[in-house]
Length: 282
Image (cartoon, rainbow, N blue to C red):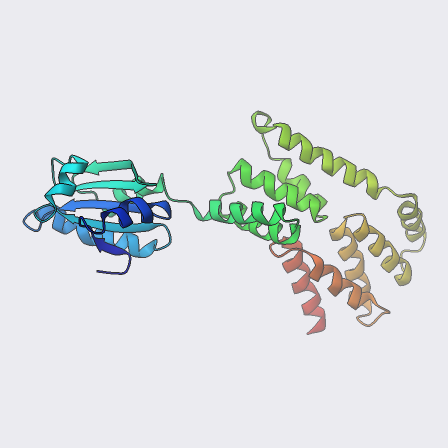
């Protein structure tokens, strides 16, 4: 047996069923060596537990050897499978199941990769680390793009890290039925960020740049102001225009690299502009 499989008996019953099930789902499997169906299903259960060592533990009960446990659970047919969580049965079935059927049964109770990433994102956000929260929220969203919870959290993290265009794109696809109070709060944050971006100084610089489109110093000044106004993509576009003409102009390269590195991991702009800048550098 693997480390994640245990033969249940009266001596270890309390530890496995009451204690271990606080941390993992315990699969209590009632079988007998003379029952062909239960023997055949044993490796299927062992395999699924090996694939999910953090969330599943297999407890096998030989019904010939453990009549007390069989009676306690009221098992009447073989094989019988029960899922135990916090010391209580939460699901179960009699008879054998195929690997596909078993996966479907367990899917209702196992945390999905998206939910794990989402939980990490929420924890990071609660600690004020919005860069890390964005990275985990992006992972969750990529795993489950249909999840409104993943979409809203990623949009919120995008606003908090200054990725306003990303946030706008995310909320634009949320249907009316899902536009709850949290959605409205995020939209409000986006509107406030955009209003803050409309500073007189930035508008004046942009007007000047329109008159002098080849002024590299002016482009850098506008790019810095755009980045401070959470318009990172527009800022990087201007900086790249400078670098594509003169890679060593003033501090353009350093400012560009600093701006790229400041983006949270998982933000598409980060990988996009890293590739663009590396294509110039190398």
